[in-house]
Image (tube, rainbow, N blue to C red; front, side):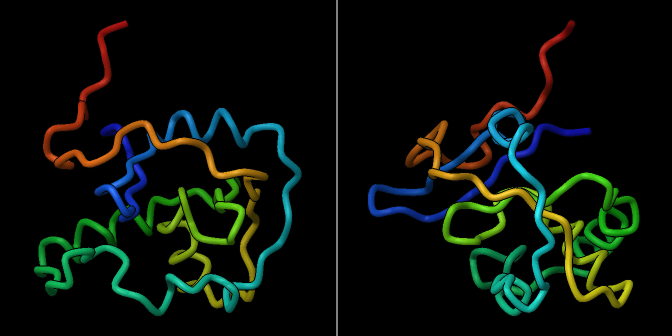
Length: 129
């Protein structure tokens, strides 16, 4: 799978977290059941961050990722309850008619791995092992 990042705008430019690092930071945190109604991004333009509409191809890509999402892995939430990893799992739970999703909540927001970068300039290929 392609390397994943979490993006969030910030006062000095786009803030970017390496999802692999978020998973490591969250691995020993207690799991909790979070009501889907508490996840505000469900009703926001989450995957079309520039405000533009998604193409049919883009919707299809996300539909495939939602279908393949594994609900045995918890969603990672920031301390303020925003999704930092797992929005496809959230969408799958919503699609399945569930009322809640399993999640872990970071105690403090980690420093971003990158600030003010163009997402297309990030390393998306995994290094050879």
